[in-house]
Image (cartoon, rainbow, N blue to C red; front, side):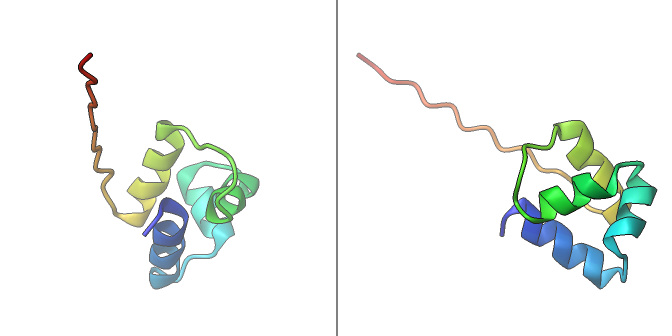
Length: 69
């Protein structure tokens, strides 16, 4: 599941409107709408604010690919 679907599903589970989430995360409504539509490229700070309100954690997965010549 991608970020926008996860965020939207959790928001609805908590019975929060997009406006509620925006206010609680101290973000604009346009930002929340944009992320839920899969548009834009939110910063890690923005995603962190949203996840905090939704009671979720951000899990970082780094894949390092080294090409040998």
